[in-house]
Length: 121
Image 1 (tube, rainbow, N blue to C red):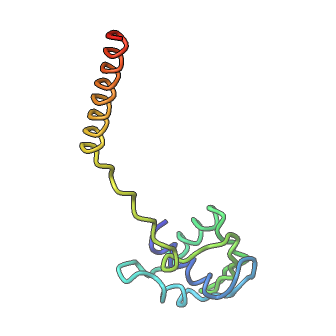
Image 2: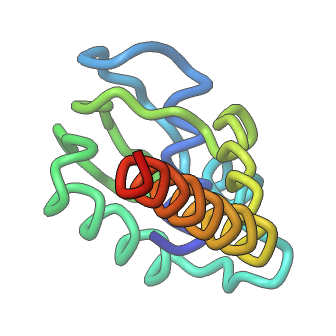
């Protein structure tokens, strides 16, 4: 989803919850567009069409520069989404490998000593 679509969803979300229709002018949508985005009716209509096809909103009617729109899905604005948790620390393979090797060697020595003890008795 590009910045213009996010701006349109943020504007509708700020007006109210899902399922309620709101009348919004094109100028109100343009206020929320990213600064580097094109502020043309064609871009707004492209974003609204994409969001309607994706199932995010419904457009009851549009005329002139007014749109009657409603959110259909719950939407969390980008500013309120929590950051993903940090990745777990990478395991230290060398100390783990050394400990396993030392444990195996020690177990082999102890087993050999017991076997030798039983042979001598």
